[in-house]
Length: 537
Image 1 (cartoon, one colour):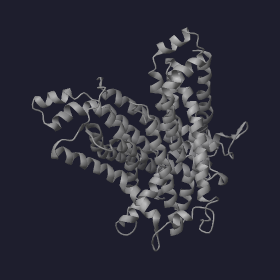
Image 2 (cartoon, helix red, strand yellow):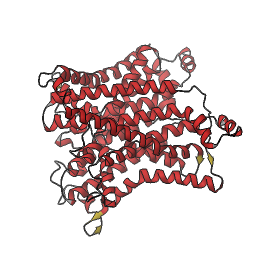
Image 3 (cartoon, one colour):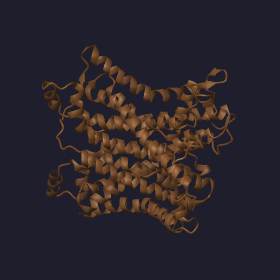
Image 4 (cartoon, one colour):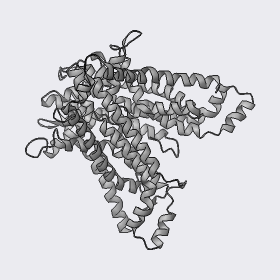
């Protein structure tokens, strides 16, 4: 490995070691060896295991429902060509990258619009509300992952089964489903992991009566000040997350089917009444699952006591209508979120490029770098925030009161998206092109500019766009380390939702719509720069 590669390797490994592995190691040390709490007494608590059981079964239920509801949508995107198909694929990602506080606000607005936020049939602060929000949030994971694989499966085996007398259902069950199993299991494992480590959705829609491991960590750390107990619970959560990842890998390998996929799409235009009806039923299911809460959120943001208007939006700026619960005006929070997310995306892109260059070279260092950099994707933001509080409060890393912690935490969340966007593209570059350039006298830096950069710049922008969108709405870690003078939009929405009164609720709705619009624009830009044939997020 040449000098440039070694320098690039040093950047991501050092960043990850200092701001991810070290905080996690501190949590483990504090949880297992801390003097403030007895780990065995905490782990032996019956109330903690009730919380752990609820965390487990609500995640399992969310996973089953998300997978079942997303399969018809995956089928229509894989099999049918129609006007607006690319827009549907792009729009389906928006809920996945929406801040969890926006998702919770959207469902609160939906329940209010349907009249099920109070009374005998109330979905407020219920398990049903949590599961519905998880389905909405994770729907695109299954939709896009499965549809991408399904679209490129060779249809020949299904045709042969049909010719031998198999019904469409038999052909799907015996031929198609086994080949889709790795994609279905892979996406389901991601949905389970995200539901298991869900924080903002459970905190806002579940209320104090519905607690998961993440919300318990937050309550012990911020409301009770018992950091050692929070660290012990974090150890339990880490063990559960690692176990989930191991089981996911085992099942995917067990059910994987080695089969070359076609390079062309199997999607065709619907022909006949039956195909058109099936297509529009599937598209309607996508619109209802993903569009209902968002439409309700927008409608409620314009509602006033006398009808509809812009009162909630006008009150976001500093002035007469400002809600005093916020240390800054909501418009200042928007500005803070934009530049902090931009800085986080810049950090994530720089470190992610270095990790991609090292990983694509293979070998033990490359494999270790890739695996390590994908770890933040499965780590709760609550753990990152708690780790920062515990680890970065002593010299020479006394950053506990520094604003820089926010973009650093958000950059860790965005890193896997940069790596997954860039790595497949940089790995596909023909090594012979680099060798030819070197033989013609090009320096390693010139080879990088002439060969690698033209091939990966679109993927790099795509990864940076995803990192920006994810950072813009990051809540789990930011709520731990945010400063009053650096208020971000998700934290502002959380504070407004916790304040009674229609004025604060209206501001929370309006601010959520603005954050949703910013996120949507980011995703649309990502789709514009996506490399052709790219299947990554």
